[in-house]
Image (cartoon, rainbow, N blue to C red; front, side, top):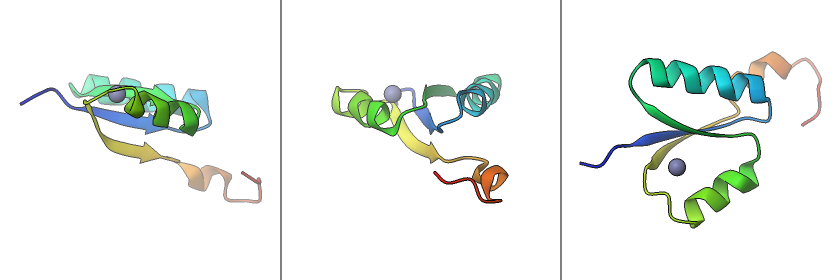
Length: 68
Ligand SMILES: [Zn+2]
């Protein structure tokens, strides 16, 4: 079994960082991105570890009207 990583994508770099640190604290690897395009390129360029995509975590924080 190869190590797996969880891809974390959110446009808020503080959220991405917090999620990544949380994952690392549980022993998981995390590859974090603030730009979905960069995340896609990361996979296309050959990352075989990212198997779980976490996108828009904590989006409910912005549900009170902020446009994406
Ligand atoms: Zn990766």
